[in-house]
Image 1: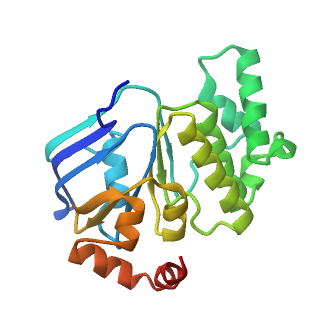
Image 2: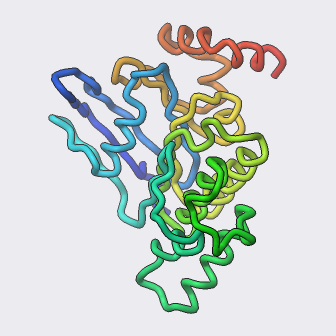
Image 3: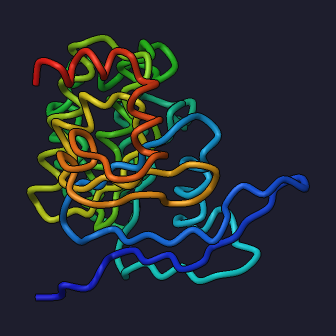
Length: 236
C-alpha cells in the first residue's frame, strides 16, 4: 500500500498579470480521501486546482501528482452541445460501444438523469448540468477528482446528490480535492482540510480540528468571518 501523498506542492509560486497569486505554497493531499481547500475569496484556491491539473504552470517550486486518470469538475459545467448521454459518452472514447453505453446509463441513473438521456444538455437546469458534469467524471472512474465549488447555487436536492456521489467515489478509492465555501459541506465530506490565505497554506490537518479548534490566527479570522458557519458550529 502506497502511503505517500497523492499530491505534493513545495514552494509553489505563481504570478498572474503581475499579481502574486500563490506565495511559496506548500501542501499535501493524501490518497483515497476527500480533502477540502478552504479560505477567503482571492486566496488562490481555484488557481491551485488549475495548477495541479496542469492548466497553469508555476513560476517556481515543485508540484508532484500521482499517476492515473484525472477529472476536473468546474463551478460552471463545461458541456458540449449534444445530448445528455453524449456528454457522458464522450469521456469514454477508449471503451467498447457496449461498455460505454453501460457506463453512461449507470452514471445518468446515479445522478437522477436517466430520463433526460436524449435531451440536449443545454436544456438542463443549472443543477442538472452540474450533476451531469459529475456523472461524466464518475463514469471515467478517475484516480483524482478535482472539484471547484461543485454545489454553488444548487438546490438542496441536487446538493445532496452531488455530495453523495463525491463520498461514494472517495470510498471507492478516488482521491478528491474540493474547493468549497460551504463549511457545513466540508464538515460532512472532508477528512482533511487545507486553509489558504494570500496564496499560502496557513493550516492543514483533520477537518474537525481545523473547523472547531483552529490553531493559527489566519484560520480563526477566516472562520469568524463565515457567519452562517459560526451559527452552525455553535450547535454542532
